[in-house]
Image (cartoon, rainbow, N blue to C red; front, side, top):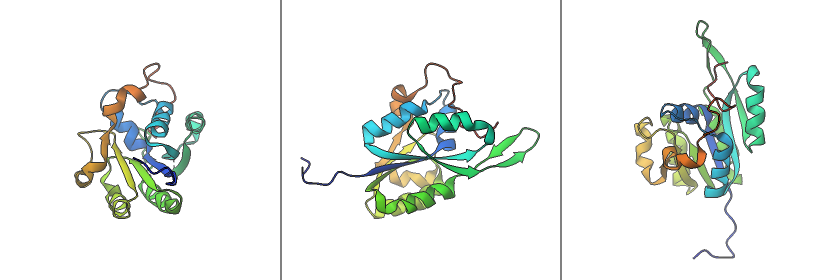
Length: 180
């Protein structure tokens, strides 16, 4: 039974947008980011959800939609990797780790959304400080082996797919791939 005098925990979510988006798309479905934000708020009581995303000037409509959905966007400058295919790269790993540490005094528990092993050190640290709540992995078969030791925190996006899937228009402003 929860102590009524206990201070309400402050929960923040830190989301690797490209890892999330590409992870669910690799399984043949599209995430509704507005529904996902609501899920984080309802299920985990996440007061703030930071979404780390590459900045592509032609994606202003997408950014507006995400902000209206309740996300705090943290932008990463992007690089054009291959001019033939116009592949744009915006690796947000450092920004996610940095902002989770900047915000560290402001939250009690963190929800990390990514299957990227680059976050191993962050998750290990949050675990050691009893600040880790959940690790939401976008693709059950495609996440880093380095994260497997944190199984007690792992939940797979597919386990709540029906609550967050974009069933209406698979092409609506939810394409977070940083390719114009």
